[in-house]
Length: 126
Image 1 (cartoon, rainbow, N blue to C red):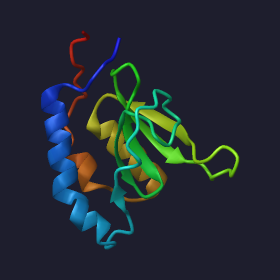
Image 2 (cartoon, one colour):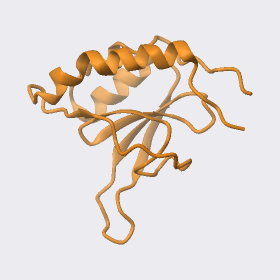
Image 3 (spheres, rainbow, N blue to C red):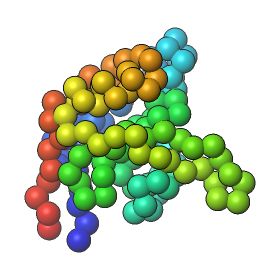
Image 4 (cartoon, rainbow, N blue to C red):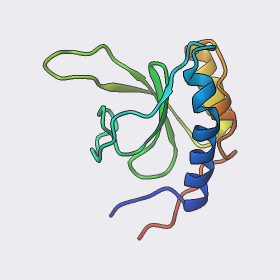
């Protein structure tokens, strides 16, 4: 069974990413807002995880594989044999917790997180 983001949430996130990509990528905060390599890998620790929403430097926000919450992850050092991998630092169902987690690890806030919907919304499973 494949779980997808609720259409409204996906639209909200797309708008947030689009609105802030140029500002953050400009380097004024030292946070490159990028989207990782597009893929459909179901492993949450994968560089090409299908649930990734956006990146903020060495951190990223993704949707868990069950579609229940956001993941806040940090990129581990690249190992030549295994490539890049991500370690999950926390699981959040609302943006306040996600903002606190990001601030605790990065030392700064991020507008793109503030623009997320307040609560994570799960789409009905098909």
